Image (cartoon, rainbow, N blue to C red; front, side, top):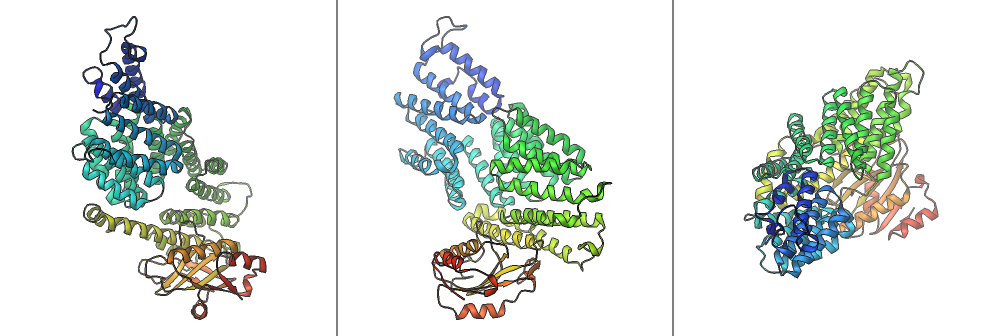
Length: 605
């Protein structure tokens, strides 16, 4: 028995939960409760004959209220109601309904408590999946939600394996199969495997449509829009997002509508329709602000889109509006949104001298803001965003027509053009078809490729961002036998470094000269842990060093200026395992050296 089966022939609630607005679902729940009577007994004066079924019907009613609360994001209520439904089904000896209700309660906890709930969720879901026949629906749902916990915990490879296992077991349960395809497609969007995501999500959307599941269909189309954006297919993205917005409007889904309208406003900006973008973003903000509780993340994203539209319309107050959006992102602890708002604010401030009749600061004054935004976006593994920033900044410089004495000559020998082209090389082409093949034939290979590509994209984004940094680099030549053997040489997401070269046994990392010594030491310690062996490193300061151009696909490394690495590599090779040799120009005092030694290195000068 499934949790809503006691309502068969009594109520259309299962269909309404999939396809009706929340108010209509709530009215039906209230109607059932009135007929059932308090505590499962017939009502004293019902408007219609009381319903048969007693405790099982009461348990189904509680489950229905919990499912609606989960759909609407009222997560505390969802946990309480779904736990109550599971207990009620258990008391009646209905193990399958009990375990399905337990699965939904675990999902509500994962959405509410995020990473802190992952370990306990995996343990409970494993217990559900391991009890009884592994082919039953509850076992498939438990595996699906285990993958959700693994994704939230940051283990994409484990999440993919679990989802594929759940997908194989879902053939008798088409409703759950469609939900698993949604989750798998969403995972691939996150990994940047947009071709694979699009193939899976198109299948999911069709299954949801056939079953009349407007909720699942809206989710599929929202992720299809994100996948199409990742592929640069703006027309497909717009069609998918418009479908999501229409479905969510029918359902009364404020979250989905705010998301879709915000994405549509970004598309309008991309197509040069700032007036349409402003109207769409304003609608998104109003919907997000009117939700209970307010959807603050989408308020921030909509505010950012409104600021960008105002900037493109020539409104000189755009920079202040974008600063407000950035402050909200900071308050929410949302680094991507904060980086995007910083980029927009820099462009708005840079355009002010061109569009204002009153004297304002020159474009060069915003250079640090450009770099900060570009570095944050690159560190998030978004070089395509850095490419857009580079393009936007170049257009602003050309519009301003600055003279060479201002420090930003219009003609620079093509350096800016080459830097932009290198950063933009991540636009997908041939890889799309290969991803579609791998997702069905060799999914583990797809995850490995996607993870490696994500690390490479992050590194490329940082190198592209460094073309905007002031002169001055800390350079490290690193020697270890494991370098380049196991693909571990690229700096991690948490690192402050970028990699400019690697050969078997050698790598060269660099940092902006303002990077704290503790961060540099921590990055090298993380690399040592990843390699599983002591490393030898020689560090030097290149006071005038800078990245001129990141590498093109197939290139051997970034184009640098005033950086010498040959002698540094020879020095690193001569060091003892675990030794860090510091250039005196770095200016690291004894206390700093001691803090690096505390990380397990032997510091010499």
